Length: 323
Image (cartoon, rainbow, N blue to C red; front, top):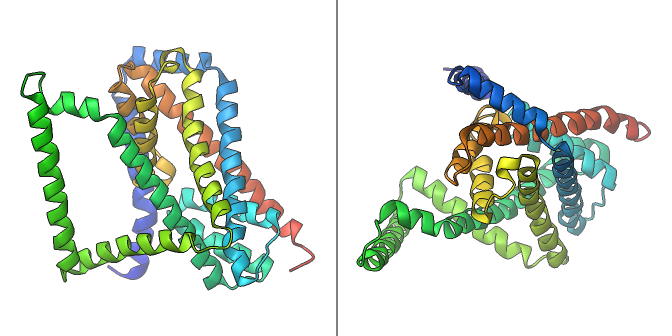
């Protein structure tokens, strides 16, 4: 298989998988299920969905502003409008080609702000390290807040439940330490990549604290991810059945939805299914849970298509005197 074929498959297969999941999801619905989900869409309070989109826009603005803190030490001060539009273009491109958005973003800012591509791309990588750290924190929080659910799943209520829990946690810690030592000493190419990735995260985290504007950068990083979580949370008020979702359901649903994005382009087909499966664990009925997932995904995708598309059109016009 040549390089061109692999590249084509890398783009096409996730889209086909997403389309298949949508077809499979729809084929499994009964006539009554379709009526119920359609009813949820019709009766949803879209003011909450609009608020979710506003929070999403704020996260994108903050991401663009945060980028300036990484470029400033190298002597580059791009116009905020250009930073915003290139960020939005990156999200749009990622819908079609996963991870290509970062390249498009660096290319665009390089063209319109005379920033060398490799330097712009390097700052985007640094951003991603900060985002991965935040994502790992939220994943850890998700495991923490659903500890009771995991305990009920693994252990039946009994006098020995506490002892079993202690043994389970102790064994888990021991296994994790053994895995850490194995990866640390392994010469296997895969584990070397894992080790380098983890070391990169650590070095990236340390470098953030050495920045001139480190606290502003950290503030924007936290703000971006807070907006992401709030985007998810406020949509729960759009449907009566999801209005009283507990905090742990919000966190778990957010994490599961975010991880599903890695499987297909923009979570096509996967996001609604994964989110619904998470909410069902918290006693939300199937159809409202499915409707929630589809409303959330549709709103996010339309936002990216609209603002990313506008940015594609406006960016060259805005910079027409510089080209």
